[in-house]
Picture 1 (tube, rainbow, N blue to C red):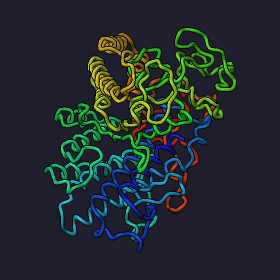
Picture 2: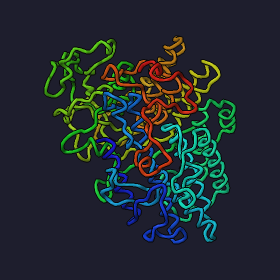
Picture 3: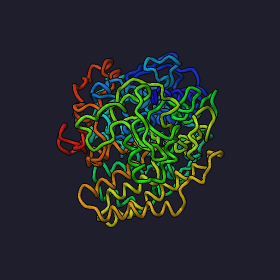
Picture 4: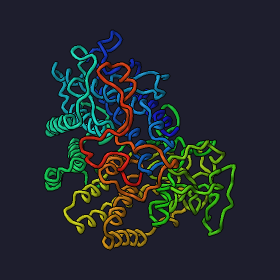
Length: 564
């Protein structure tokens, strides 16, 4: 439900800026219904690329968040919960052209593609006319980032034969390392395109408003995240030394949403799902809520909005026990299984009403009691202990953001690559400072909230000092878990890199287990997109989720990650 509603927003926005095109696949021949490349508006082509990219970021962030317990994950068996269709839309948006109409077979409703539209821009540039350097720089940067991410989720991707329908109607896949190399080369081209501060030629830049310098900082930050997973410390440090990367909130890479409900609905998709006349429709992660509650994290009133003071089977916000309730929370009557010893199985205290990893029970009548998304990043309500119900237009009206690469994320990457524990502690501190400052700035979106409940500057300082002190005092796995927990908490709303970090390190080991004692091996990669497998005779589907990305050199599943 969460992913479906997110794509409704993207469809509405697409229909607002682009009209009437056909769905195509990776091996598309020239269609008489398609405009020739030299007849297409380059601004609409770049709009299409940006929307495809935004749609992919939303999808893969949700998938990564669910697997790493930042969000709730539905499914006792990983293989069954992640079928071959999981990444169909991501694949099509990356490679295919144009926009489909409502009723698309994958129920997404949007198939805007990056590669074919990039090729159309390249053809227009070669044919003369306006200088499209800005368009090409942005398009190549977004295509490169998308290629990195396809490799991260699949282990391989199409590149050398992609987009060449005459020569390669059924393109083969390239190994992950070679696709990474190609993506780095694309970033070099993108930086060259943007280096001379080219004209935007009137394009609507959804991310940086036409600021080429900010796009170059984004390019360098994409390089940073890629050097983290490949362990290239020298290249990482060279970018840090040069200083031209995302360092503060002004350069954060994010998609900003609005408050319009119709024509188009441009609200944050999570807000649109949770702030309805029939109540909230997303379950929040018990793991993350319990972790933030235990730490008294100053961000929790911004991340989550409680509709009730107490969850069945737990302790309410006034310190009183709440009776279990079979109708609204059936698991509150269940004795936790042995593999959940030491973890919260069902009910989190203080009214944080969510679900634990893998719980596949049916939906009870809890839409007006479950915890909803808050004011960050979805533009909902700030939690001021009012415990009212969600509804249309409340809080920030959905004017949130889709985080992609934030300055706080980059500081945690610097911590990952740090040469000493002391340096790592320094970046833990700066990452938390930037994260909490950004999160707290969203409080202003909810003009009706009682901000007396907001953490004070002293509260924030005490929290950060406490976390850094705990990190300094810890050793071994305890030290790693503190860093990883704070990193994952910071990634709430834009959790793509959590999936990479978890496969690289196995931390945090404190994540809750799956609802099922034997859920199958943790997914090291996903199945190949089934729609492409069916239509491409050069691609065969895998039989499991255990294939490792080239940079994932840890022990094979199921021994790793250890918490699974």
